[in-house]
Image (cartoon, rainbow, N blue to C red):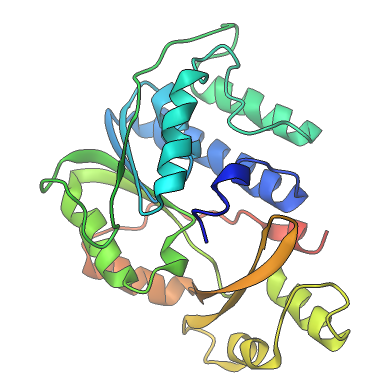
Length: 266
């Protein structure tokens, strides 16, 4: 599926996607790059390299890995034109708030006032997150965005992230949360006989609403690709359960941030 969406992966026509990635990149720039200044970074499930190039703009040596050959190809092709002359426009700017976030990110990375900048060229490889081809304790920082919720072997993927991270290194993880406003959206959609086109079903809504509140839940996830909605299986995590998993792998929680918020309703 991700192979097929590679050609439109970076097109952020949807307000919610543009908002979430803008906010996500601002959090990474401020809370990771500015604060910790990692020199060696692994971007797991890198897609077309949105965060890979962001870390590179922060002057890190970055390696991006993904299981999709077409996404890796798209990420590599960006080297041909992403040379810093466009600043930090990692995806098309269709909304004014994207420009504002790009300006903020440039401030965090001390890039304002420069029309162009150079950066270390990232490296990209095909690899399975549950079986990374790297030595132990190899990276200062590991980035893991947009994929853990859709991995069957998510426990193994987190173990691998911990294995390749240096002691005292940092780890940035983004997952689908069970308790967010999209749950309200999906419930309203179902009660309106799918008039909102979100492909929700009663079984998923029941699991999300009525499973014990601290438990993570596996359910279908609506994904828009090529102008159509489809569904993939995903895991909606609770902070309670995710914290226990991370602590077993040796991680301490330094901070947590919501990303989507009200845009699900919009």
